[in-house]
Image (cartoon, rainbow, N blue to C red; front, side):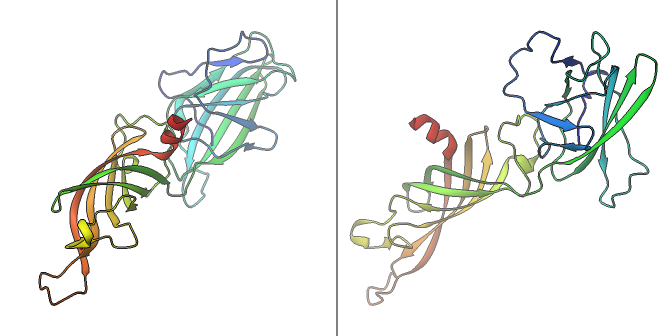
Length: 269
């Protein structure tokens, strides 16, 4: 499931073995394709541009690449190939067995989809060889862990917490958030405070567990690493009746800011 650039009408490619070293592209993922096997070496990236690289048929003077989303039925008879003009790789001379092509896929793929990528190679004698490769983007929902600070409104107290964020779609954290769908930003949050919200001597309230209270809410990614959130903080509260010593669960609203734990580990180093 290869993607081809759909930004300009043509996506430019390189002959890796003959061209000068490309500009720094390490932040951009590369996916290798085996045209003989019709397979990619990994799950296809989504939400971000990426490169496809592989060995073209010997003698190739022009390689055109297009992709199509495969319907859930698996019917390949009516695929819509994109982009219309295809992404092209054109070596300076007919390719040899040692040459490798590089094509940029500018139009991001969607998560949880199967794709078929078509490679049409033309030779110097106008012979045409068509190859296909099938791939898939990630399907599993994304789960992340972060740490932050919250403010519980009704009890007017701040607390540190660690939370797990559950997205209902796969996520690539490096994907730009400008214009991103709500599913790329919004997640459910389940966490525990790591500082107590109890008052002095647990007089009117205490933590739900040992020294932790439950955090339930939702988070919204403001950047790739920073999240704003809100929800309810669940703790234990004393009964107003002094004759009742048993405490009961209570909840208050909270607002929060948190950072991805991967970022915090990097800062700690």
